Length: 142
Image 1 (tube, rainbow, N blue to C red):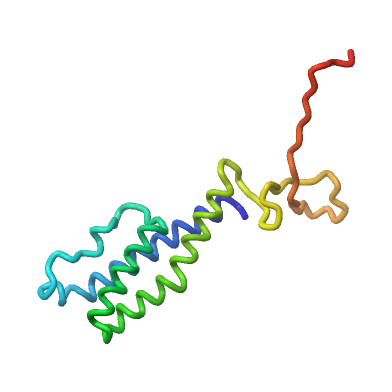
Image 2 (spheres, rainbow, N blue to C red):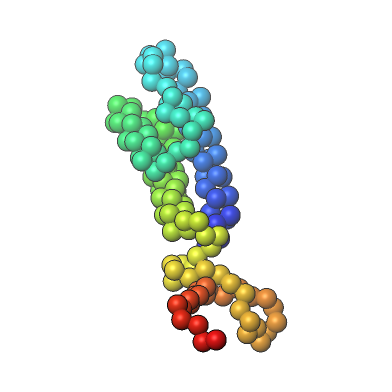
């Protein structure tokens, strides 16, 4: 996995989450008169959505869904959050934790990073997972 790709996809996911909550807010504007003070955008429009915040928001929406079980846009939003956006957010957070300060990691060997190897018999510049091992000694031979 490449660090820039994870960052880019996580940013796009954040935009989708903000757009989804904006759509929910628009759908509930007419109900705002009935239930004043319940504003979903107060949860953090400008801040980044972590998986914990997203989970709490989904639980609040599910509680609203219990009150109004026939609200189709709300059902659709909860389903999309549960099935698509929340699992992806968890995956991207895990990838960023594994990346640390590196630029890439291999999914099969988490300690390896992608490097150009000297042996490239196909001459296509393909990157392979590898280790940057350096050995230092205290005694000198000279």
